[in-house]
Image (tube, rainbow, N blue to C red):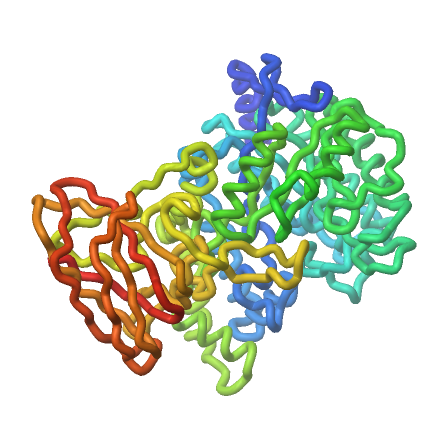
Length: 573
C-alpha cells in the first residue's frame, strides 16, 4: 500500500510538466498541440531474451530453453540467482540517462508476461490471476527514470501468455502448451494484465502508449505459418479490440498501439477502428529504404487518418540506419530501434563483452564434451550478468553518430584523436557517411528484398558497424580485411608540425599489391608497393617516405588498388 501511495504521488507530481501524448489525425501530439516524432530504442534482451542475444540460438532459441540449459549446469537455484543479477544489471538509471543524452526521446519496453503474472498452468485455481510484484516494480522504476529524463515509455507485450505466434523465439513460446490463440484462459489473462497495467499507469503523462501484442505471427486460415498470407486475421482484431475495451474501463487517455499479423505488418481484414486514440505499428528489417517499402504503412495512415509508428527496426549497418531515419523524418514517422544490449553486438548502441569462460559454456552446450563444473559455470554466468551493467558495456559511438549526426550532417569527424607522429590503427578511420569517411562495396543487408544481397556488411563482426570489414588478430588487435580494389579509408590526423613524415605500414597480403595515399581533396601523396606476405595474418612492414602533413588537422585517404590487402596500422614518424 505504501508503494502504491508513493507511486500515485509521483505520477500526480509529473502533471506539472505534463506532455501527455494523443493522436490528432495522422500525427502524434502532446497536450500543447506540438507534433511529437518518437525517436526511440527498444530494451530488447532485458525482460525477455532471444537466443541470438546470448549466442545460444544454435541450441536454445526461446528463453525457457535458455533457462533449461543454465539450470542443467548450475541448478534451478543457480539459474534464478543468475537471472536476478541479469535483470538487476540489464537496465538501470544509468542506461536511461545515457539514452537521453544520446538523443532518444522514448523507450519501448518489451515485457514478458511471466514477470507480472503466473502462467495459466501454475495458477492454483483455473481462471485466477496471481500478480507478481517483480515486473511491476521493474516497470515503475523504469517509468521514473524515463519521466526524470522527460522520455516516453511505451509498454509492449512482447511475450503474451501462451505465445502469440509460430516464431517461438520472439514470444518465448513453448509449443507443448496451449498458445494465446488456442486458449481462452490465456486470452483472458492477457486482457486482465493489460487492464492491470492501465490501472496502474493511467495517470502518468510519460507513458507514451500501450503496444498490445508484439509481432503476432500465426496462420489462422492461411498457408504461411507466420501469417504473412492471412486474409482475415479475425481472431487478432477481436482480441486487440477486447484488450482496448478493458483498458478503456480504467484509462481513457493513453494511446493504443496495434500490430498486424506476419510480424506486425499484415493488416488484412482490419475491422472498423474501435478507438479514437489509436496508432498502427509496423516493423521493418533487411529491405530497401525507399518509398516502396513504406507504401503499405503510408496507405494505412492515409486511409484511416491515424498515425503510424515503426515500432521495431535495426540489426543492420550504419548506412542503413542513417538512410532509414532520413526516410522516416521525411514522412514524420516515429521509430524504436532494436535492441539495447546483446553479446558481441556491433549493430546496436552498446555491446556486452563476451568472456572466454562463457564461450566455454557455449561450446559445451553446442558440441558436448566434458561438462564444466558447477562452480566454473556459475562464475562464468555471473560474470556475464556483471558485464550487462552499463558501466561495463562498450558504447558504440559510431552507431549513435549514424543515427543522429549523420542523418543531418554529411561531414566527417575523427573517430579518435590521431596524432603525428604516432601509431594509427587502420580501424580508426573517420566517423561519417559512406562515401565521405570511407568507401566499401558491401555495406548493407537487404536479404528480404533481394536474397542475393544478404550481407554481414562488416564480415569480421568486430568493433564498428560500417561496411568496413574488421577482424581480430591472434594477438587480440584489430585489422581491416577483405578489402577490394577501389575501397578506401579516411583518417583525420593532427600533425604537431609542418613537416614531411615516413609512414611505416603494417600489412598482410597473399598477392603483390599497391595502395595509394591521397589527401581528402584528391591530391596524390604517394603510391606504396606491397610485396606478398604469404597469408592473411603473416605481417610485413612497408615504408612510404616523403609524405607532407601541415601543422594541425590533415585528412588523408588510403585507397586499395588490389583485392585482399589486410591493414593493421601505420606508424607516422
